[in-house]
Length: 528
Image (tube, rainbow, N blue to C red):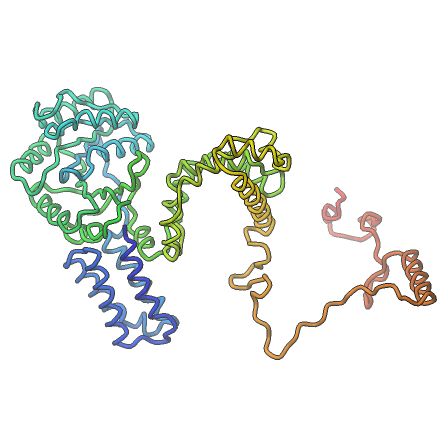
């Protein structure tokens, strides 16, 4: 969603690189470019003014003028101001001291409240709560049925005493839902209310009546992140008429400009608590302003990626495969298939790759990434026999043809898969042995050990390598060389020239008791 804004901001920062000092002109140009980028992203004007004023003030202060790298300091300032405009610190849901906790959802029609109610119920269930969904949207056709379907998929019960479609009293439904939760010992109640097409006086009064009837601990305003400034206007009107304690951004995976997400906190003062990032029930996450700011500046969001991986991956299985990669076993195509199946639980590969730092520079490749390639690879591996997965060397020409027919692919694709698998296995094993370093890359950042990676000193040439002398073509001289080699072999290995210790001795022949060592030191010599 923030791709355009991210590209504009990074282009602005790129023009500052290499400057040892920033003039007032540089700062004004940078602030002006940031202002245009935010306005193009459909950020509200009050939010833009507050943001650029803070950046201008801090960019002209001593923290930038005295910095060793002013450009990086400006990036740091923009990052911190983005965190501030997005809400500062993350806030948890306020749970009632005496259950049930009542959470009321409100927002415009079409913002995705009903689907989000199911996602919130599934998230609460994962956190160890026992939620109950209440179908109080009796206005929209089939809204009650939709909530029942979503609740069934999430494994969360739904209270729906009225059929909806314009029939029933939403205030009474919400009130009896809270009573039902109290009777059945549900500790959280999520009340789904009817949406509105705009600032509708009648629907606004209905929201006020539901609020007064159930006295919610949290009122979450659901905002469609794709509709821009209209979301901010409606949120402001709803805040004045009903009030809300937090915001949920839906459809954050869309391709709109995303100005609502950057504006609503400044305009309403309410923090963003959650974000819906897809259509699946699991595409729902806590909103962290610092992580979202890092995504906008193309710094990645590794923490969210790790959290999602921890939920999707089996720890014991991951540890077993890690040991195999390190060399304690053979990493097979069967293990590779299991890893792919676990990766699919995380969601689309494109979405995961976007959380990696620096991926904004590869946006075109990410856009062209075909998710079906993952399915094709899975089909190829599943078309192999268990013996072939365990030992890919068994896969000869006829077997490759059979696997290609079984997976609906070609022999060349099978060949490519096997080659990439062997290459990846070798690379992962080398990284495991080097402590996570790429082969030949050395242990220090920027100190490349690969050919051509380092700079040679000017005017110096690398010393010639010593090569092993071959046998002489002169029969007499060759016989002399052979006699000297035989004598050296008979004498055995000797200490290097200049050594003070003479001929080396096998450590196993040394008696530790004769060395006058400190007590307990003999264990380091293999004697206990």
